[in-house]
Length: 371
Image 1: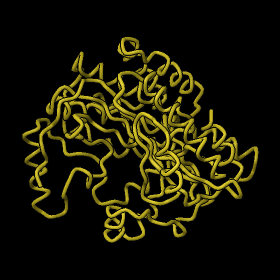
Image 2 (image 1 turned 135 degrees about the horizontal axis):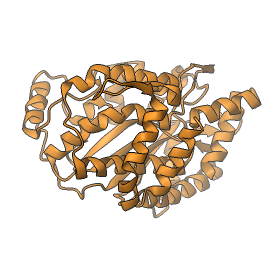
Image 3 (image 1 turned 90 degrees about the horizontal axis):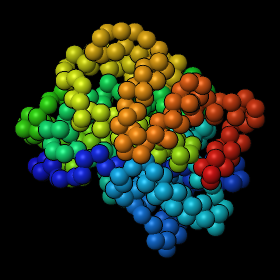
Image 4 (image 1 turned 120 degrees about the vertical axis):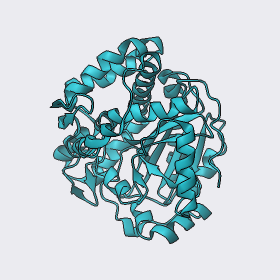
């Protein structure tokens, strides 16, 4: 199968996808209500789309193409309000968070869609364990070569994205001691991790042709990379974010990505190289495990410093580009939380410490999502 042409897109435009939890209002476990939610949501005239996900206690919403984080927030707000209305009719709740705190994977049902059934045949129980919830952010690139440069420059900031969005401390009733335990489920897939460090589209096409020739890969969808190019949209897609507890944070994370991307396009601040990836897995693990308290090894300088400090430096560096694209409020929100060492994982833990009941944590998360 051919990779296909890299389509034109307006540089620095945004698209956001959110995978969301559907929980009953009896014990706040996941509930198989995706089909009912899709039926009710189909009656609303909304931007973007609402589609099923791997198992029937989850759905995915997405925006149309947006030019700013404010537009992302506006579209997510419209979709969120309709979701809440539909959920109330079904007596269920919709929540963010990268994992459901206590659902048992073996109780999940695969949503009846041919691709999901194929994946179940291939990956076995891993597909049910894929009942995890992420945010994907697409950013428009001027051309195919620029997209690969963007992808590999962004890779230095994957730990920042993980720590800022981390919202999955609990798995199957236990505190994992990770801020983002969700990504541990992604790493189990054989084609996860990072893209090969090729910087021209011609070289990437050659790599893709080799992979399809092995019979292991049929399309870009088969790569579960942290960041991947999406030639059909003309974008690069970042996939490491946990789904935040609020749409405000989801929009702010999109603003952070747009600000970074604008800086890269304007200044070309460094040329990516294979050696950038020497510390990639270490940095990613640190961010998953410790969130904003992680250690970060700068791939360029080799400097070891607190990730929180590097996030603050980065926000200050991209602030002029954020301002030019209307993302100042988004960066301010993230800066304030970073200074306070506060992400959604910490909020969930604080809620658990106060309530001592994970069902109540899920109920409170559902209330937060309502806004």
